[in-house]
Length: 169
Image (cartoon, rainbow, N blue to C red; front, side, top):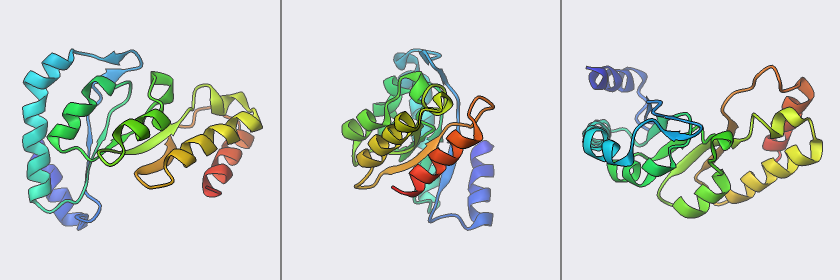
């Protein structure tokens, strides 16, 4: 039923060139909430069918939003046809620079900016260096720099520095 809703949304929005996002939080900062074997046995066939149907309907991209550290599932998500991952939580142990090197050409990434240590630090040099290292990793494409969220612990000055640093990349 949810797949049909997604396909209808894709059609109504005429979003074929962009695609569809799947929101499925199955991880936390410590890793998956179930084993890779369980994912492979139960979820992988469902993801494969779902992504195939979405792409057969004409969607160019299928992006998965999953908070936490989903690294143990990445190869299976690629196998299922997932094109991109969001939010790439740095605080969950996902370093987008490393992921870009490991999965270049196989996955795209949306996120990667640390909103728990780097941005709240207010340290201008640290924030700029963090953004620049991420931007450098994405120079050849496959990355949209962003943060998972902006909480009250991130000052307006830090947010503005983040925003202008990203805009300057």
